[in-house]
Image 1 (cartoon, one colour):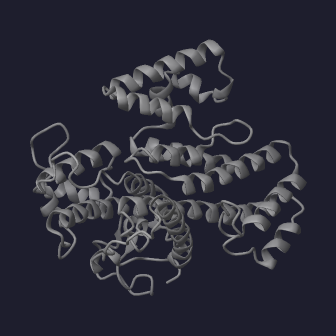
Image 2 (spheres, helix red, strand yellow):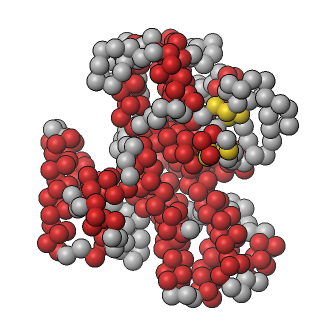
Length: 405
């Protein structure tokens, strides 16, 4: 369970590229898929490691013809986060990659992620040693130190651990009893990371004008009344998938940038089909092509979303360099990730986060981010920063589905 949790960022990238993990790692390292499937990649010989480095160099040069961009990529690789033991930190490494897409500093998100990486590494080590006492003590120390949200920069925990939770942990005397507790802990850690990224990244992307959590806009939404036990009004649109909500979000954002107002409603398949082209062709999409993205019949990938973003920018005449924001990459990656994480059994089952708790975490992180920004601004300019006009999102985008409801 712990190792699967640590592999989520890799799964996210592989799913976004519509690849298996062995195929993805083959592309990135040059190692054969058979060697990758054998595992224990860290144990490769120095000569093989040198070949991997040379392969990565060729891979980067093929994609980055700008010397400045290539140098920046090398710098990012050289500064990839590591745990205290010197091992790669998968979640902090994922945040580190997102800093470049577009260039946005994410120190808070990386700090939270690195703490989680080190906790997971310590718990995995205890599992391998069959050391239940160390496993329990590691979890107990973490919960007593941090509570329900990771403390950063020496701050006190956001919410202290409940007394019952601590008693439950202390009472465990075999591995089987740890499973349910660990599931809850990993769930808490996951949403703490995501809400931190939501607060910090969108704070930069929207220049502080974004006053609410953003990532729920591409989570699963269900038909009105369904969660209250009502029968579906129709068999269509019982659930609004992240892939659909992502395309609607990107369209609405560019519409807003172009016209300084929001569209009256979500774009229909007909509207999107009229402005998007098939990959590698000058043939516009059919309404059914967009509908297939909406209902999950056709898989959206990172490359497709990037192509459609460029086409939408051209449609709204934002193609001039520097006009309008870059692709909101974290939202894209998470929407494609949630397409498989939150929707299961081919759409027969779905998972909903507790948005009440999520927004509490988001508000906590947003306050931390604003304090950091104010302190930096005052240190440089000896004055308080001016806040821009807040972005008011349209009602049709804000309708959310939450476990708490």
